[in-house]
Image (cartoon, rainbow, N blue to C red):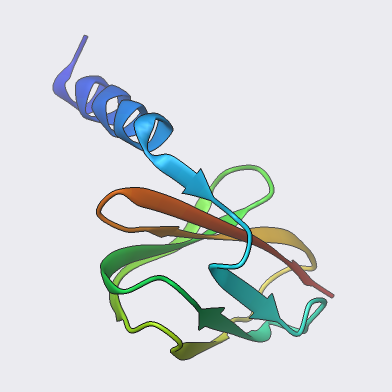
Length: 102
């Protein structure tokens, strides 16, 4: 197995073994939207990785963020209509929120 495949395998194992939390930790609104949406963070704090993922599983954007409990972040994308997932990966948890773009 090559180095790239090993890194991917290790990353997937780390994400699968992390706690996956969906409810009450973040919320995206408005849902449905036109590419402009906000994410409210509750009970999430510190350095994290933000990912926007399309329905096929392709990562549309990845960026490092620092989140403060209760903070709201605004996003503006020019995307095709469809379902997307916002994934926040913190030190020990993964948070997922679905958004729909019209």
